[in-house]
Length: 143
Image 1 (tube, rainbow, N blue to C red):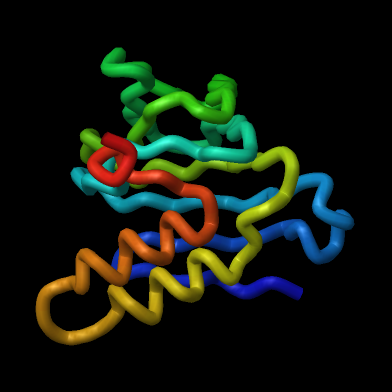
Image 2: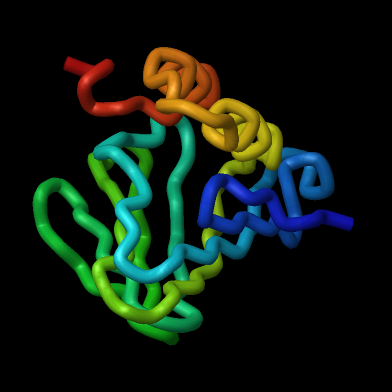
């Protein structure tokens, strides 16, 4: 049984992780509050990401192009593609995320939560180290 992982105001709940799928995929629900900037531009080194919009509208920036993902819409982000995601709207955005193969697992989000859910400013270097260790490459680290 997977429980929600709270990273500040964001919620991540795994339905299946690499542990249950033998590494075939990770599948999780992502809930992003209104008017929230979620991620820095980054790429996934070793896996593809497919997003299914469930509620609200999520704004994804893929190689500099903004794409609105609405309920029922799919977005596929091939590995190596620079992207970021935000909720620029007044409603909560809820989406299903599928990573293939499954290399991330809930551990990535638990480590981010442990680093970010503290008093004081975020430790940017620690966040960057966690990201890179899991194959999530911030653009600033790539250049």
